[in-house]
Image 1 (cartoon, chains in turn brown, green):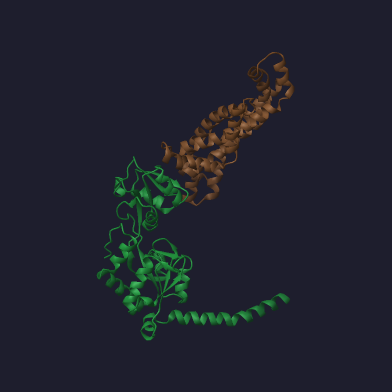
Image 2 (cartoon, each protein chain N blue to C red):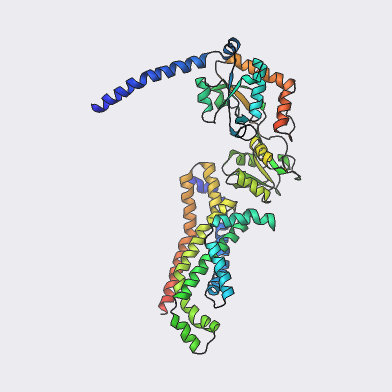
Length: 215
Length: 273
């Protein structure tokens, strides 16, 4: 196991950094897109809600690998070339944003109906009520499942290995097939993933506690 | 007690069968093939061939027979040895079954995309090279890459994860970028969508891809040497000589070139000497 780390340490580190970058970019963008889509889904505007629903249902129900392969193989034939790393990030963002949208929608719907009615009856508009009354309460409901989505995102980033995205899993595959030491290699790769996911878990738990303290 | 009785009975039942099997296989395998061919009125040569390899030996469902480069070469050799190509019988083999089948005497020779190697020579003898196989590059027709030397820091080569061809390309073109994908079809799809400049693996596989996808070509001669030979059992040196002689004849009289051009129309006929 030490042998793999000393011989292949540099490429493992490169893969680790690429996984970290891919996850970070996909996390930020999918959080923005997902939150907007979630709000659109419960919007009173039928068209907006319909479109958001369509997007969410579509990408919620297609395997991530197919979305990523689409951007790796089909997209460059029709439009501009994207490499495996970019195709992976695009796929991850689209896929994860659908899940985040569902989480946000559930959070908004989790706020008792009376809150919206009360807000509207005090003379606030729909968007004002949403902004000042519903969303602040929804965030608390959303934080724990959102943390799970982030962790899933990091783990799902291993799909980059299928499109030569130079991530941790890609290099793990190469090392395993070169050394034939499959067991040790994947243990090391798993530990590298834990380095990202464990701190993420604790951060989300901390945020959760802080928000609960405000109750 | 009961258990061992059962085992004894089983052994008693199986023993004559095993004896029979041992007898027949050893006699068939030990019989000199050349002698058999000259004495028999219908001198049948049994060739072990692939039935799942595009261009070399592929079963044609419509015609109900195996077709390919290996098949045509075997027919030409049979014609030289026995006087009639119809005397060639084809028995489907796989990489796993071919050596046991020739050891048992079920087949006389293997002509099934088999690379000549030291390890295999311990089991069988090989004829002269009949196809100069080796690792090559597949590129689009309009590519500027003409050989492995044209690969540099600006080019990307697509290979299959964990294959020896991925390691070979790093040795032969250390400067170039190598991306490794899951399998040949994914590597070729990635080439089609511009994710790389060339796909590398054995030229036999690449020729199979080209046959189904016009617009692509091989870039230069193979840069590794993994030639295909015809395998013949140890102790059949007479037959081996006959096959080598027939191979020389068909190379000299142009039959080989004809067969080669039939299956690989875009490729130059190699000089096998």
